[in-house]
Image (cartoon, rainbow, N blue to C red; front, side):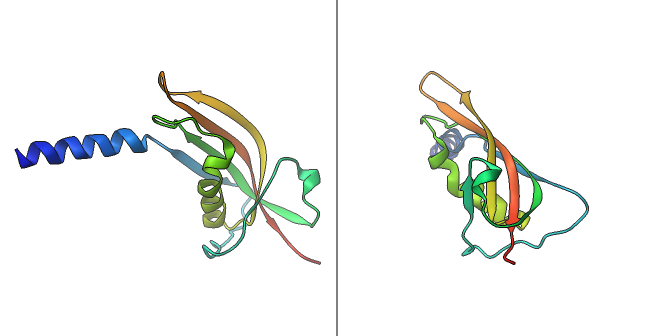
Length: 121
């Protein structure tokens, strides 16, 4: 009986977490070291909003099916920031968002954009 309960608990956990897919494809051959978790990461909706020089670290692709929830960009912003830091970036320029239907009650989100590293003169 205990094993059956453990199985159901694991199944419920998998159902609630869904299958989040996130990756950053490096841009060019330059390597960027990961940044500390405390590094702020700004999210921009256009390159024109970035008022300091920057380098493109890579292209981010993120999909969260939003199992049993309705997600917006704000709901996944921290996941995006975490991916940017891992890639060595301190900013994201969102180029596209899309709705991901994953069930009757679930609406996830997909995000594509550029991970950038802003620099000061």
